[in-house]
Amino acid sequence: MENKRLLSIDIFRGLTVILMTIVNNPGDWGHIYAPLEHAEWHGYTLTDLVFPSFLFIVGISTVLSKPSEDQLWKIFKRALRIFLLGLSLSFFSKIHAGDFTLVVRLLAMALATVAFLGDYSLRRQFWVAVGAFVLMIGLCFSGLTDFEHVRIPGVLQRIAVVYLLVGLLHFYASLRVQMGVFTASLVGYWALMNFVDVPGIGAANLEVNKNLAAWLDNYLLEGHLWATSKTWDPEGILSTLPALATGLAGLFAGRYLQGSPKAAVLFAAGVISLAAGTVWGWYFPINKALWTSSYVLVAAGWDLLLLAVLQATIRSDTYWKPVLIFGMNPMLVFFFSGIIPRVLGMIKIGEDGLTSWIYSQGIEPLFADKINASLAGALIYVVIWAGILAFFDSRKRYFKV
Image (cartoon, rainbow, N blue to C red; front, side):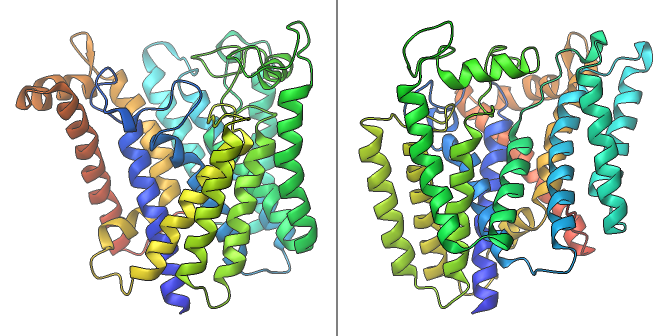
C-alpha cells in the first residue's frame, strides 16, 4: 500500500512537471492551443491548474515527510532554498558584465545550484541560505541600477512561503487549527477582496490593476513586480493567503493517504470541491491571477479527481517510468528549464537567439499549421528533458532542497 501511494504521488508530480514544461516552452508564443494558455482574467484553462497542483503536492509531501529532531531547521532551510532558487531566476537577466555577461551569469547560476541544491550539512545549508537571502534582498533595495527592478515574487517564491506555513502548521498545530486556518484564509480573502475599499481607487473590485491585491503589491513592492504588469503580481502578497489554503488542501489529502485510502472517497471529495468552487465562482469569480477562493476549491477538486484515478488504476511503474523521472527530480527541471531558454536566447545567430533559430529553421518548416509546430517545439523540449532526467535517474541522482 505504501509503495502504491508514493507511486501515485510521484506520477501526479511528474504529470504536473511535464505539463508545466509544455506550457512554459512553446515553439512560438504567438501560436498556442487555447488550453495551453492562461485565461485572460476570470475563468480558467488546463494551464491554470498547473501551479495549484504544485502547491497541492507540497501539502501531500509535507505529511509524508518523516519528522526529525531538526524539523524546524529543515522547514526554514528548505523554504529559504526554494525561495532563493526562484529569486536567482529573477536575478539572471539583471546581471551585466559587458562582453562577459553570459559567462558571469552562468557562473552566478552555477553558484546558486551548488548553494541551493547542494547536499551538505543541514546547519550549513541554513546559514548559507540566510546569508544569500540577506545579500539578494539587499541588492534589490540597494539603489544599484541593475537590480532596482528585480522581481521579488514568483512561482518558486510562493511555493516556498506556502511550504513554510504548511510545514509549521502540520508539525506544530492541531487538525482543528489547520482547518480553521484553511477556512479563514478562504473566507477572509473573499471578504477583503469584496468589501474593503481600495486606497486611491474607490470601492472594492476585482478589476485588473485596480483591486486590493494589486494595490498592496504596488504599495509594498513597487518596481519589483511582474515585468508584464509592472504594478501588480500574479504571485503577489495578499493572494498568498488563499494559496496557503491550496497547500492545506493537499495536507488534508496527505493525511487521508496515510491510512487506507479509497479512490472512491478521493473522487467524491473532488466532485464536492469542484462543485463548491464552481458555485462560489458565480459570486467570487474563478481567477488564477487573483487566486480567488473559488479557484482554490476548483483546482483542489481537479487534483483530487486525478489523484483518485491514479489511486484506482496504478499498480506498478512498468509503463510510467518516463513520467516518474520528472516527478522524482522536479526542482532540477523547474530551475534549469528557466535557465536554459535564457542562456540559449543570449547566443545569437544573426538577429535570432539560438532557440528561435533552431525552431524557425528546423521545426516550423515541417508543419503547415503554426500551432502544431509550436506544440511540437514544446514536446521536443520535453523529450530533451526526459533524456537528461533518465541520465540522472540511471545514476540515482535526485536533487532536493
